[in-house]
Image 1 (cartoon, each protein chain N blue to C red):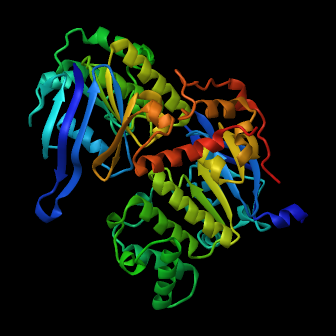
Image 2: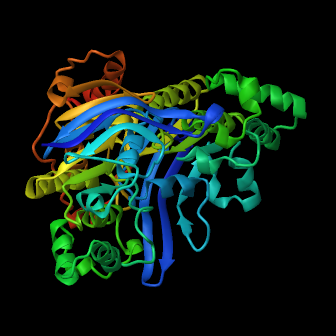
Length: 290
Length: 256
């Protein structure tokens, strides 16, 4: 194994996601490769660009008839493509976990939030109920929830969106995974709450030396929050760059996306509308490997 | 003449102990042909003002006027002809089993139009879709196309005022640009008055000339977009909102 492979937590090579339809096979992700170290990797693109499918494919969360093909999806050197469904279950949550967009749909509505967090912990660690509760309360405190004892006993409908998302983060972090995949974790939240949730996630990821895959459509957010960015279009990676250099991106698609954002400091009469070049579809995918 | 005039509007939900005051003593005025934005975080009461205006919330007091007419508890057909609303989520606001033709046709016939056929073509043309989309169902349309249909439906009764409730927040940025351009074109063509709700200051700044900032049910500050751009704000909450939006913008400046 090369040096780079040792340093990288995750390596994805030539990943395809296909959905057979009545009118032929639809390729949602078309042969992308990237690696993830102890960093914050952003994946941006519009809806339908395949960014969420990439995240799901890594965790093998794509159900038949969807097909996932890859030369290799290596987690710390171990090829996930070769694991059985049963082995895969011990990867999900424990080694790679995922935060979805809307806490309203990802929390169990008829179970107290604290019990859901404890359950997540007990599923992966062999401990007593009391110890799990203790650990859950600590975790709730770590995601900056005031009065964790009270929140522990609440039902999901009794918490706000921002709090719900922090509870999700607590639940996903409690088994101490190495990689966190966050799929639009703040899109359902207010601007002011957004930053708070991101800060909490950022701190936890940094403190634990984790790798983060941050999937978002928000260019500004990704540019401010991530270390490296992959820009996806039509199932391929069209450009990859350092996040703070995103605004020097050269691909016409990335430029088009950047220019279509209204800006407070630079008012324009008409916003630029993205003109799609059919050639972008057929360009080769850029490798996001380091 | 004023387009929309709201004075001392209070809106509440629930009774007695469970009462929540969603909007407290809000006042605003939009001149005819103007465009006004309401910003604030969720729960600040900005959408509730729109809903109270359209008559979707019965529990309010204060004074609301539209095109010089004071509003009572009941709205007549003339009101709905002159005031229309575009909702946030085009995936939820179109009937999944009605084609575009049915959606627009129903609205037109409800408002007593006769030449429905020509009007549908005209409406689809206005929002940049064209006749090819006429017999499609919502699931055969993209998010941006759906929002165009929702805008066409709102335009059907030839309104003078459009209430826009986060019209682009469910859309991609590239599609957002298209819809924002469409909305500013339509405003010019049809001399519409806009009252828009959004949490995105940049979007409001693009489409509106004046904004009101809401927090916890109260309008804390009303100012022009120029003043906001120049950061001449007086309320700390506006400054906070502005700082979080400008923070995003600062990073978007290319590095010299």
